[in-house]
Amino acid sequence: MKRRIMATGLVMVIIGYTFLGGCSNGDTEIFEFSYSNFFPSTHLNSALAEEWIEEIETRSEGRIVINYYPGGSLTAAAAIYDGVVQGISDIGMSCFAYTPGRFPVSELVDLPHGYPNGYVATMAANDYYAEFEPAEMDDVKPLYFHAHGPGVIITTQKKVSTLADLNGLILRATGIGANVVKALGSEGYGASQGETYELMARGVVDGSYTPREVLKGWNQAEVVKYVTNCYEVGNTTMMFVVMNESKWNALPSSLQKIISDVSSEWAEKHGMVWDYYDKAGIDHFLSLGQGREVVELSASEVETWKQIAVEPLIDQYITDKTTLGHDAASYEEYLLERVEYWSSRAPSLEESVAWVEENLAEFINN
Image 1 (cartoon, rainbow, N blue to C red):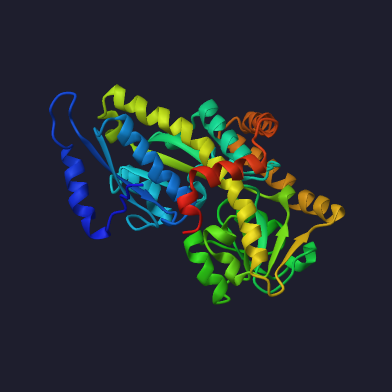
Image 2 (cartoon, rainbow, N blue to C red):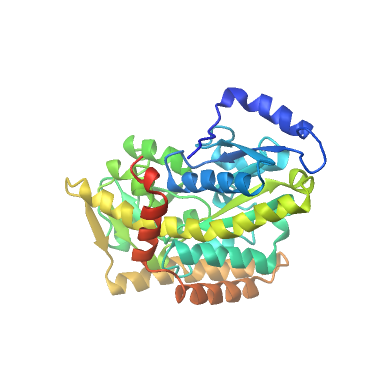
């Protein structure tokens, strides 16, 4: 696969060229863009971003050229959205949760809704945006969304099997996740996934409220001893791929269609990658041995956690957003319906793993 990972020293050159719009010659005009992604280059979601670029360039017959900056090398994770708005990058992938309060309609997706896996969360997130098209994203052109599987609690030293075990812990969590952690009795610590390994290794935080994929995708299994499965209170994180609005509007409709078509195909691929990572993350975690353990909550403990950390948060969301003029009850009703719809249509875990192993084999062991 052709690589297009750019050194940061070239940023100003590329931004300047892009601002000038390339060379105009009727329908042979070349459009050059920059793409900022917070995922490291070795992550499979980064691999999919590269393939998205390749597919668009192929279908556009070279009329679209996209220079790729993974790992937050152009803009940091929390700055990617604004970076797209401001034209620092033309395209960006990151998480809404890194800017809490900025996206009030979208943040409902992050709340626990019984997502069985990342595929369902991803497909429901795309349907949710398409249904409501929240004004909070009017300053960009949204291309597609994806979302990880249900969050779990990972800890470096302390085993968590009851609510009481969470008291006094400091857990990395962002956005809605921070609210869940607080409701469960722990203290949230806002940080991106790129910072979390070091924070756990140094003992700044005791663990993280996170999808299982980070155990392998971000190498966090190396500093974690316990994984507590708590899917019923597991949140997701809605991630975006957005484009600078003026750069989008400058494209001819034929090229806009190519980007839209490829983007609609790619969301599902990210969903399967998230499912692959959930399995791969746990497999990798257990393979490291040295007393590592996966903890399953008892049925009574699950119900307690749901009553404390899920129902009140959703009720509060509906109350708060209704006060702000949003039809939050309708948002919740629609999202639950989409989760149910996609849960009966999602590929099996084995099918997702097989697809990833067949289509992204060159990246799996990177």
